[in-house]
Length: 429
Ligand code: DOR
Image (cartoon, rainbow, N blue to C red):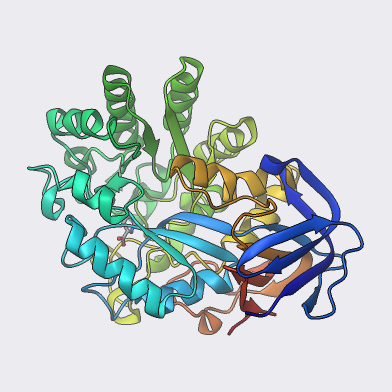
C-alpha cells in the first residue's frame, strides 16, 4: 500500500486539539505521524499548502436506495457521490426494499459496500419491521451485524408505546434512536410548509406543529427511558427550542440539521420546482434563523445531508405527485462554508466538529478523528475555491438539487479513505 504524506496544510480537528500547520504521514491505512517538517522518500506527497486538512467527513443521514431502488442510487454511485463531497463515512437509512430490518440484510449491505463502496458505510436498521410501525425489528441481531443506530426515517413511529419500547430496548445496546419527527396525521397530504407560500401557491400545507409535537413526545420518552435520542433533520424554531431545553435538563438528546434547511426558506417553492420538495419541508425565515442559532450555540450537534436521490422522471411531474427529497452529498460542504463559515455564523472549527467528531460520537464510532494510530480517513479542502454547482457533474444518480447553478465557495479537494486517495481534484478515482 502506498504511503502518503500530506504536507503543509492547516490541520483542523478540534476533538484532537489540532488547529495548526502540520504534516500527516499515512502508512498501511493508519495515521503514522502528525508533526512539522515530516519527510518520507517513498511516500506520495499531497501538497496541502493553503488548504485545510480535517478528519474525513461523516454524513450520518443518507439514503443509498440499495437494495430495491437502484434506479435512484446504488451503493456504488452513492458512495462515489460521498467521496466527491469529501465524505469518508456515511450512515445509510433503512427505507430500502426490502427494508433493513434484520441481520441478513445488514450483512448484505455491508458486504456490497466492501466490494463496491468508495467510502465507509454504516447501516442504520429500522425501528419497526417493514417500517410499518407495528412491531419492533430484530434490533439485537442487527446490532451484532453492524448497525450504528435505528430509525424509521421517512416514517414516524406514531405509536408512542412502541417508540417507548424501542427506546427502552436500545439502552442495552449503545445505539441511538434516530427520530423522523413528523405527526403524520397532522401533516396529512401536505407538500410544503404551512404559511404565506402555501397560501399563494395553493399547495397543501404541512404545519410546523407536526414536527414540534413529535420532537416534544420523543424528548419526553427519552426522559422516561434514559435512552439516547437523536432528532433527524430539525427544521422548526420550536423544535430547536425543545432540543435546547432537553440538553439543559441533561438529557441524552442530540440533533442534526441539513444544508437545505439552513440555506433555503419556503420562498423557494414559489418556483414550483419539485427539487424544492423535501420532508420536512423548507420552512420560514424565522425557522431558518432559529436553525442557524441552534447550530451556533451547539443545540444542533450535527450537520447531515438527508441525501435523498430520485430519478429525473420521478421528480419531473406535478408538485403534488413528486417524491420528497434532495440529492445532498455533493453540495453539503460548499454550503456549510458559504452559508455558515464565511458569514461567521459558526467557526470553521465548529463546522468540522459537526461534520466529524460529533456525528461519530452520536453513532459510537471511532471514525472522525486525527490521531497517530487512528484510521487514515482524511479530507483536504479549499476554503476559497469558487465554483458553480452543475448537477450534470454529480456522481450521484440523483440530480434533484435546488442548488443547480448556485455559485458557492469552498470545496473538498482530496478524500482519503483507509489511507487510499479516493477523490482528487473533484474526480473520484
Ligand atoms: O425528503 C425526504 N426524503 N425526507 C425523508 O425523510 C425521506 C427521504 C427519502 O427517502 O426520499
